[in-house]
Image 1 (tube, helix red, strand yellow):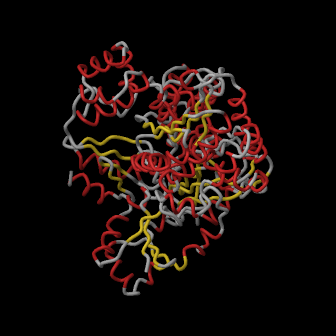
Image 2 (tube, helix red, strand yellow):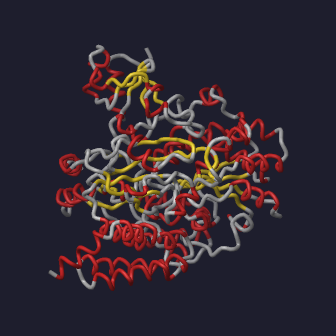
Image 3 (cartoon, chains in turn brown, yellow):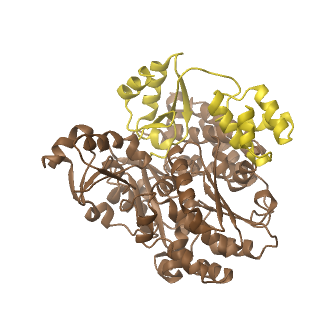
Length: 490
Length: 135
């Protein structure tokens, strides 16, 4: 009998260690694995393929006695939430031990790097380009084009930087990947190194993720001989959201304030320490071993339009079945929220979902037929960003959410450009006046004008995208803004 | 302090790792520490000081109180995070420092908090109060 429990940060935060400890008290060995990503069931106990969740230490005796029917979910691999997914990047989630080189190799690990070693740099880039893989961090820039720019850039020293500064609320795919399948990210970075001529990589992880930092550090040590001469350093952020912005992140690694750099020059030409640098998100780099091992076509066959492959969607907030759901592009937002996510956790109607983190737009159920695809989201003034979907029930106050977007931007602005530094503060003040019922229409016009300035005048996405949550809240939920003025006037 | 500096090569990109070590060891980055680091890295005191003040993880002054970092971001807000925050403030009073953190990556199991490196998920008013009382 094999007992398996995840040691992913979320499982641990929900009490997985206590459950594992209890099994040990009954004389059983517990294997700590990666997480299946069914977060509402964590801690999830797996015994010979059968799942029990959410399990508490007090349930252990009943599970062992075969009397835990209330939390028994049947065969995990056949659970509807798992069976409905297309898992390319998270193919190992739930199956393997995160730091086991043996498990990694046995499940096809290092196959992509092996292929890459047999190819020229040009051929590797060509493969990634043909796969249609786009940056999964937010902007959706084609990975192959970025890699090719660095490949062709002059310079003896080049770098691969992995952006693991996953600061967006409602996103956790990077964290899960680093904690559950760290070797795949390492393999992806080594492939990027071969493709561009870089022999040094950095993984920049936010300090709010101590578990991911520990796992990556351990994995980098274990994998070092297998990726040599490529080397990887793990660097830890220091609590600045703006360091998720690529040029801020480069400054931060260099030991500077995490202020954004004006572009151009692009990091691909003039990046870390002034050298040509590939900077990609965790999910982007982690997708490349599959592309190299199985071929560009195998990856590109998934998806719709110019959004190829799969997206690890993160269902978060007030959602019944929250967790990680990897699927080909093209599924609708409504299917994700209502069908896969099961609606809200507390059973109240869904009123709004925010897609793409704190800088993403809020959507009403009326737009739930929007397909998950970069272009389709742009067409309705939204963005996919890092693929996080945060669900809110009907008690949400959208004026308060719009105000929070400004407040967050004001708190996290690096201060380098005026539209972001001052605009966010003025935006929050204007929202406060509007919420107090003061000259609602005038203040709304002022907010819209301010958002225009921030959108087109900011140096980076922090100031430039804050208008998305603000304006989408105003556009789709006008009743939360207008009613205040009427109520105050009466 | 000398021991921490000796562990890091004298290059500017060692600054953040050094500051993390100093913060972890002493609980804050003092003005004396800033001077020593500047000397070691051949940077001006203003440059080091500017980096210390930029990042939320580094504190200029000591605060011996226990700290709980409570997520105040959207996903936790959607799960009753603001109510939990009110109870946290009440339970903490002046005795415990309650810091805001924007996302711990446990967004389907909020509201969440972190004490040291220990994560706590699915908090409600009763649980957050018990956690803070136990600090």
